[in-house]
Amino acid sequence: MNDNLGWIDDELSIIADTGLMRQQTVCAPAANSTELMFDGETYVNFSNNDYLGLASDIATALEQSPALDQNWGSGASPLVTGRGVFHQKLERALADFKGSAAALLFPSGYAANVGAITAVTGAGDIIFSDARNHASIIDGCRLSRAKVEIYRHKDVDHLVELCKRAKDYRRKLIVTDALFSMDGDIAPLSLITEVARQYDSMLLVDEAHATGIYGATGRGMAQELGCEDGIDITVGTLSKALGSIGGFVSGSQQLVDLLVNKARTYIYSTAMPHTCARAGLLALECLKAEPERRDKLFKNVEYLTSRLIQREILPVRNYSQIVPVILGDTAVAMAKSKELRSAGFYIPAIRPPTVPEGESLLRISVSSAHTIKQLDGLVRALSE
Ligand SMILES: Cc1ncc(COP(=O)(O)O)c(C=O)c1O
Image (tube, rainbow, N blue to C red):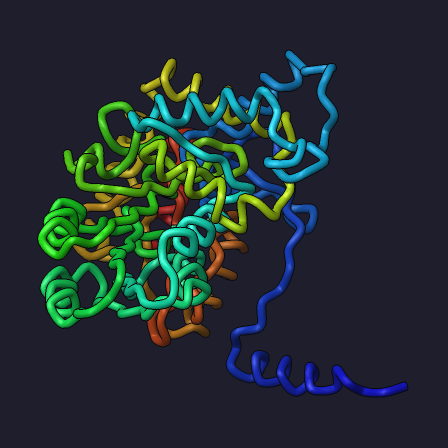
């Protein structure tokens, strides 16, 4: 037998030697939405993005009103026969929620970023991308065949410097996360919209972690900061605060028409199951009907972070629902994560290449569903 894949053992040894080997896990939800089962044990879950505790409530709502006339799988890509009435309704509801003319569903937020970036840029264009943008943005930039300039994290002066230097490009695109997925910090969106305007650049903002959380009606960080008008393309996902699955792009009708024709991750991938589109609709209804979930989330964030600041576990700054405890060394972060697991808390260590070398961290995801007892327990465990 030939050994064409023999090199994989060497590759895996290199990954193992650097302490960065990733392992698959099998987790199951427990009775309470803030707990999970792993290897037969129950842990308090501070590691998922179901920030408003919607996932379990949507599951219950779907169970109570099954759509018996729908197949489970959609069976085809959206432009063939995969897009049904629930997909259409959800796209309309997402556009209304975002206050945009139109919205388009993708199989995931990852696909939405890759599809949108590659549809609006190509060879001869230039993209300015924040150094800490999500992998799906990075991959979209790589696939676009545009020149990519990385500006220092949240550094608007550096962005301006790069924009000034960019001459003779057909189109320009600035792209940034709104709420950065690992550090939980916020992009200076108001300033970035001004830069985009001044340098005639399109602006794409990925609101994955801010959707459903920030802004007067939960549209996201741009609504919170009052700069929605300056953004051309918004990416969102149903997979985080909306407790479901699927990504979307919102913006003008022309933008959506272009994506329908050019976004390959939309055209060449099976549409999400009809039931998932129904789940998205339920999530939006719930978000509207129960704003108290967001209030509770912010209270929980304040409760936890003020105590961790008091104990000098966190530096003084404002925190979102993504709370990073930066430990630096990967081995230290791994050991701390293991220790926390022994104490009953599930918080994986985040290591390179997800974060830069020397910046490994524990990423705490706070949910509105966490109880004071669970938050106090985590403060105690982190203090030890
Ligand atoms: C900032 C950001 N954008 C996009 C995505 C991708 O979203 P999805 O999980 O729906 O593919 C993520 C997911 O982790 C993310 O953190």
